[in-house]
Image (cartoon, rainbow, N blue to C red; front, side, top):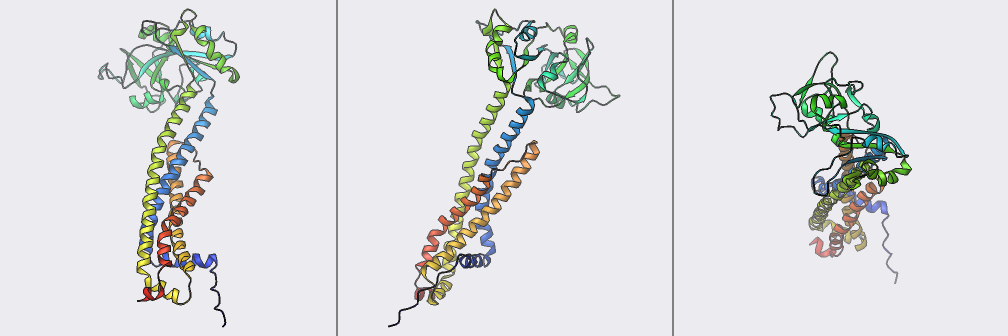
Length: 398
């Protein structure tokens, strides 16, 4: 007796072609099923790529601004009352050998308002500080419009931080025009607007006046409220350890020393922790999309019973039928994953550009997005494919 020929094995390309044909026959259902996968992958790609872009932007900012800036401010006395920095704090800090530059600002305690029509209590979160001309050099800041204090002396002129300028409605300083703000009961002429200063956010929300001008017009006592200094990169921690004792030898415990770059890094860690929540939401959306794919494939098996029976009657093996429907599921999820990755790239790029960040896309995130979608498709299509393979030809054609 002549043995029956062994059934041929379909090549991978043929299996994919069969799966693609099955998708083309139901475009609307395929699009809706792929949408769930795409939403989940979009969320996951964006949640992973946005923090990477933020971290790169932070790294670039710190590289430009430097991590060698230290700030010192008054702490609390033993009784819990606010302490005061000595008026010799800046020259004393310059005695530390690794310190390359030092300056300070002093709080005047006077409110900043657009005009006398605004109540003194409504300060919009702004403060008036006395400053010296070397402040921008130490902080690495820049003047966005106009000039800095320079040789203003005791003249009532003011330079606004970026946030203060926005809240006071002063976008820029135009030549030939005069804009004034009220500090205390004295009108000061705005001569400059500063750019963002991430290492000194208190300066962004301040109105800066000359040191002598603050003493003459605002009753400033000459004591600095914050000392800013730059040290050699290899000696920052050593300077940090002796700074309090140098600024206030009598009461070093009443001086608080901070490294602003550490605060920016802590902010980045907080944002990364918050992104875990959105990553979880993306996983839920992906799970819902996988359920949708499984539902689509189960319905497809029920609708195509005659097709399955005919193929089995013509010699198709259970493995070939199972491979056909599994390929459909994988292609469906892969299509959704590819669309999700592209959407995630567009979302991340748009958000990064709106924040002025470089758009960063880890390769493992993009490849992992498509790979995860394919894995979800394989898992979601396993049961429908197995169900299709178990259909007997006679029962399917009945």
